[in-house]
Image (cartoon, rainbow over the protein chains, first blue to last red):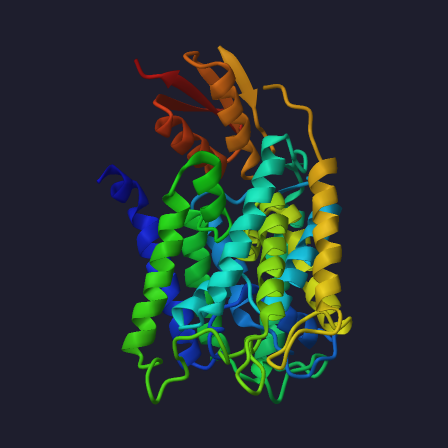
Length: 370
Length: 71
């Protein structure tokens, strides 16, 4: 009872977030991709012409909403605090690694839950991989891993990312000719920009207040045996399932079905004859192990870092630049998967990034007083 | 009183440091210095789950948490 009392807001917030994430598909976003922070950063990278994959280029207003929602909420609750200087370049590299892992599987941890809540059971393989990655990250945390302390920075530095979010949203509204927008593929499927911004602001408020984190939820279970963050993520998944069933997304007329193969915007996991492609399961597992490890080392999932950037955390802001660069790298160097199969260098990308993350885990330690 | 300074450290390092301090200084009162609402909440949740009562006080932009073992 005490647990429920302490967790009631994150459970309610997680549920609302899940419902919004599921319904965003009915309102225009791609199937099983109502909200995918990694995919949305990749789309933004494409719209900014940092990669040339024409199917995934769009300025996703949800991301701008996350930042602006967290900015406004943190100001209102006196938690906006410009800070930075905690190994920004290492955070940038870790963010690139998160994107490589996410784009091999085709989704961030939030989308893995949306996929699962849309009947895509292949997500379970990735989620187990994610947990393994988090456990490796915990190993490093316990032996003293740290990216160092941040310090106070001038207010203007903390305002940079909310300002960028606002400017890019204006570019979206005016459909600036300087940018590129997909005419087909997932990038051409989107909700009304104002609705997308609104969804983002609501989610930004929820995540800022409750500290919702799709990496922290697993980390806290194993690190401190605490289920607070997990309760929010569990409520998120329940919200997705209920919304999908009520909206009619399952069944004959809906886009979703329960199963492992041929799910919307996912690796096929089966060949044309229906034979299982085991390698895609293995790489889904490993790519999400990479996401779990890299995100644990950088302190949270892509959504959480997006929120922190709105709260004035410039290190988290550097992470966002890493997500955008990672999206571009994954697309430009044939690392990202597609619905047809894995990218030519997808497996290499995952292996190289895993090695980088392990090296960072071993190297980055701060002397502890305790 | 053993002091744990986690000022400026990002999530989840404050929790890891306090967890280590609790293990190394069982039964002692701990003073934990944090600099934001999020580490304050995380450290408080950990301390309460480990049987400590937590008293928070704001000092010059820092939050000082006094963790006292419940008898």
